[in-house]
Image 1 (cartoon, rainbow, N blue to C red):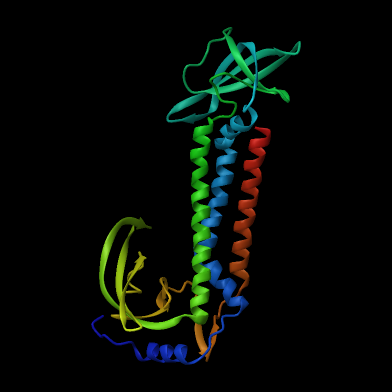
Image 2: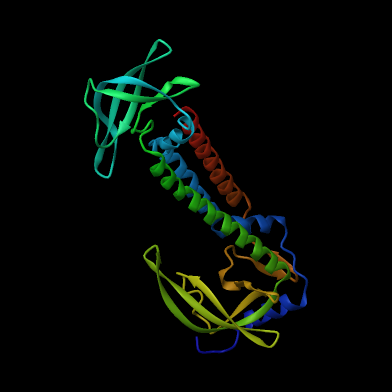
Length: 299
């Protein structure tokens, strides 16, 4: 990595990129967007939604909607027994109770970890005024978890969906740079380790100097795949002269694009697989969102 020059192959590519208008094409654009980390993150989002819904983690959201303006009455605890779920090494207890609304007797179930009332205890009951079958003992949860836990757990799929959305935006940026970005030579300066690891590999900050309109910009790239970026002292970089935040190292392009014909980006791979993966990811997210909404509506 001591040679401060581009390899002959990359010099040829640099000159080609600078001299000819560039076109990506719809097929390559879709491949590029699907290869930018979008599919994996959205697939993980859908899996989390399904798992959390299956195990009743989002049940506490029901409490927010169903008991915003509850009716109240008195009832009696009929039975108490261990449920099938546990949190923080504690079993969720199921409390069965009876209560009367408009001279009609109902039977309900609540969930609680600690401070469970005994059988025969009189209890204050909250119920949904539109449907008295939906009820809980005051101070307990209608679902397996309370609203706070459900909202905290909801942050995890929201975070992975946001990461996928940011990857999509970054893919759109790369698409623009491939078609209209300037081409420059980024000179490697140094690297710094971060506290983040991916697949047991440390993520590093790599710093490069890029000359834009006679001025030097310091460019920072984060990656755990350092081998592909530290093999040469100079790297080709696509950048936007008007926005220092818009740049991309050519060696980091997620799908293997080549330019065999002047001005035309090409890839040898089929479009079928990335589109299939994207459809599967979106389908799982859709099913997960359906289960989440179903949990809120039906409890």
